[in-house]
Length: 271
Image 1 (cartoon, one colour):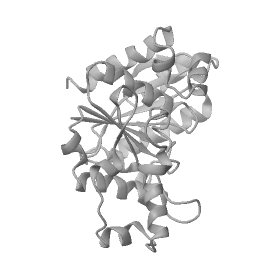
Image 2 (cartoon, rainbow, N blue to C red; image 1 turned 90 degrees about the vertical axis):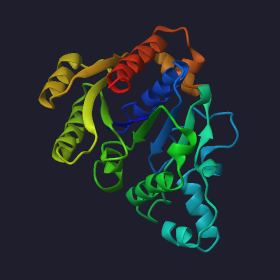
Image 3 (cartoon, rainbow, N blue to C red; image 1 turned 90 degrees about the horizontal axis):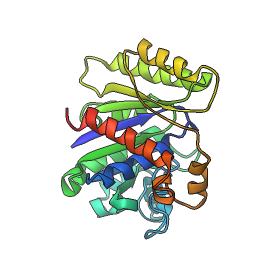
Image 4 (cartoon, rainbow, N blue to C red; image 1 turned 60 degrees about the horizontal axis):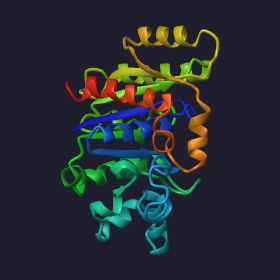
């Protein structure tokens, strides 16, 4: 089992990228688990559109917090101490192409620590044996924005992710966020944490975009593992409540996602 974390500036298209990669890897015959590490609990929403219930209704930590609040429990730890039944099937559901889906989620705005919710969710997944029960070949963590402190750095830690990829465009703020994430990884070097394995260029068609991202990769001592075009088909697919690989599987954009999935698989699964 290989665990891969994806980071990047909010709004850069990271969740869209991860979800399409999950499908592409699943279509290659791999058992894939996608874990959303965002309080909004929306990483796997499109993967699960039309299957069972919505994310909020049945398996993210937000609904757990809601149930705790309704049951008189004020914190996640209160719930755990009460030893309420909590099993792997409460966390993991199946989405498109058989991708296994889980969400860390978080508290209501202003009512708790989102980073702590991510820590609790990932620890709980280990505790109840999610990885042993479902035996995924690859786990993809979709981590909130460019936050690399507290719970949002959890997927970088030893035992959670083996590799980190950063999704960025050539826009200045995206480059800045990617550089900060890369610096955080460099600061963790020597601790047995996940290693920086590459940058994914998600194009925004800004001037000198490819050169700027290549320069960033060189500065961080890594490589650009693949690039994705800015395609209107991505938005059209999401408007239909689908990933691009579901809505337009024969498109060139779908091939770009498949090529990127193959590149990442070659780097991580054969290591």
